[in-house]
Image 1: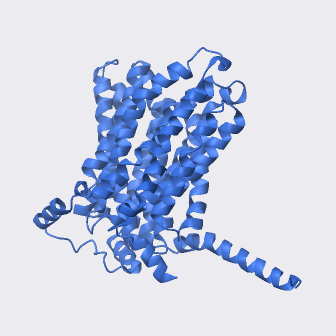
Image 2 (image 1 turned 90 degrees about the horizontal axis):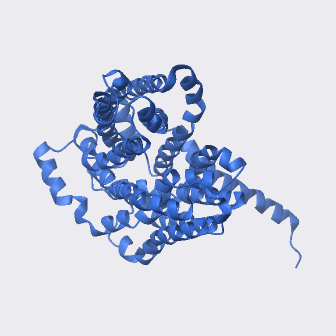
Image 3 (image 1 turned 135 degrees about the vertical axis):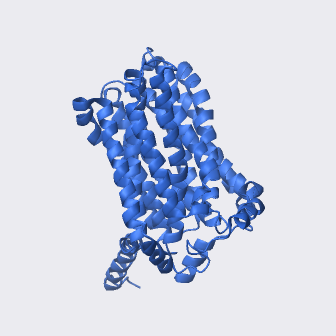
Length: 469
């Protein structure tokens, strides 16, 4: 029996339209999202731009303006990045106690004070290690640590409140994508300002953007907008912000449901540490690898190659999320970490521009598949009124990753990718093979524990989406 061309032509457009709809519908849902959710998105873009803009110049700032050597300057960057992660663990519960609007305003005010102090620090007397300028600058960093420790858990807790089953996955993914867009934009706006006004001039621009972020939260996250967003979410288990337990009851509830008692949750967040080491290698290993193991284009423009993944994440995250929003979250975690964990083995074949791009693209696709879903998973399994503390504790392994990876990455660079040695005499393949063996532990661990992990977990998002179909 011959195939009917008409039937085939009718089927193909139908499949095509369905595929396009699967990709576009989450974006359509997000466009029609509430004012409060858009306020969170805009604030997160501004804060992402500011945070990555400051971090990218911070070591040079401590070199030139505070008078520290390279080792001490890098330690100050580590003080900020690791401190923020630890701050999320300690302060993530703030949003659970005082609500999203107050928590975000408080966090941004703390970051504003910290960034003003940091920018003024070179004028505060002498420079050098433990000088008055150094101590003032550290005080500024501490303000940013306190603020950011509240800010990110607050944003994700707000997304949980302001989204529906249809928009939740895209809501979390957009925050993650905007963070990466923020990592890319400073490379466009910072150089001309820095050449004209210096690093402190750039920092003052970021101070102004922090003020803009405060205004966004104040104007977009009004009490009326929050109430409308929670109502439109139409999820009965979500309490309105004003309907809170008394403080004494809330503390007792926290003690009873503290996440460290949840063995599945603790396994889940710690099994992600091996694949998260690849994030840390983005600034601990990749810059040196690209500048030392390559010659010509890659070596001369290593910053571009190192940072191109941020732009790729911004582009790919919403697309991948749109294609996979209806898939089981835990399954996507396994697949995503597998795709991200395998590419170091590609670099094990040696430095080559093709393998480098393959590594960057594949790790980005894997990251886009699992990292936003991890944040969604943590937010969704958290008991009512405990999203902030779950988000904060979920960041603790990331703190360990930054510390642990920085301990051994330098040793591997010295032995397998040392400075001043011709690329043909290096053994970078061995280094990346070891890193691949580390990163692949995550998907293997998730797969082996899949039955135990799923048992008893609340997969509310999957159930709601299935019910909505």
